[in-house]
Length: 412
Image (cartoon, rainbow, N blue to C red; front, side, top):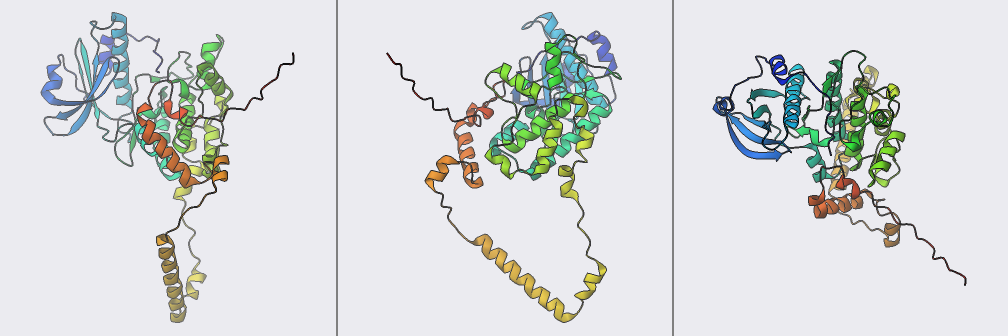
C-alpha cells in the first residue's frame, strides 16, 4: 500500500516549462506520441496509469511508456492535478539524474490536457520483486552485485539532495541478468540545504523510524536523505533471507518493531550468511539516523569490497625456488592429482540421509532440504504473493509453532 502524497507544487503550466529540455520531447497533442512510437501490449496497470511496451518508429528500439490519465472523467480535479504534478516532478528529477547506469533513463515525454506519456528505457526482466519470488533468496555474491548498484545510484541521488522516499523491491527494475535500475520517482523530492520533510510517503514495511515519528509527534524534527539508507537495509535483508526484517500481521505492531529497530538474525538460514553482511545490515537499520551509514560509505564497507581484493603477489624469492626442471615436474604432478581428485569428488553421487526425529526438531538445519522446502512452498503458493501492504511472501516465513497451553482443571 502506497501512502498518498499531500504536498503541493506550483501550477502545472509553470512546472511544465521548467522540465523542458532538448533531451525530453513535448507535444501539444497525443498525436505527437503516436507519430513517434507504436504502442504494443500492456505491461502493467496502476490506479490511473498504464504501462505499455512501445517501439520507436524511427529507430525500431523498444521502450516502455507510462500513460497517465489526468482527465476528470474518472477522478476529481484535485486528483488530476496531483497526478500531473507528480509525473512532471518525476520527469524533472530524472533529467537531473540522467546518465547514471543505476537510475532508469527517460527517453521522451509528451503532454496533453487529458494524458501524459513518459517514455522510459525498457526493463525486459521485470521487477526485482518477481525475480526474488522465483529464486526465493539470493546468494551473497548476487546480493552484493545488486546492492552495489543500488548504493551507487542512491549516493548519486543524495549528492544532488534528491530523496526517493519509496525504495522497495517493486521499484527496482532488471534490465538484464546483471544490471538493475531504480525507478518510480513519483514520491521523490529535491531538498533545499538543511531542509527536513514531515509528510508521510512510502510503503509501510520500508518506512524509517524518523518517518513514523513525524506522524506521532508534532514537534518531530522531520526526516531527510537517511530514509533511503534505511530502505536499502530492508532490501538487503530481504534479498538474503527471503522475507522482510519487519513484519507482523497487525500493522501497529509492525510499526512498533520499526521504531525500536527490532529484527532478528537467529533463524536457520542466517547461520550461512557472513558476519560482514550482517554488520552492514545493522549499520543500515540503525534507528538513530545520525549514526546510520550512508550509501557512499556502504560502497567502502568490508562486505562490498571483499570481492575486489587483489591477491597477494608471490614473492620473487619463492618464484626462484621452482625454476629447476625437477621441481617444476613435481609441481605439475601434484597439480594433476589435485585436478583428478576434484573431478572425482564433483562427479561422486551420494545420498543424504537425515534422521526423521532430528528433521522434526530442526527442519531447516540442512541447506539443501531448506531450499527444496522453500522452493516447493513458492511453487504451490506463488500466485498468492502480492505487492500490497500484507506481503504474503513474509507470511510464508512467519509461521511459528504455537505454544502448548496446559489444560487447567476447575475444582468444584
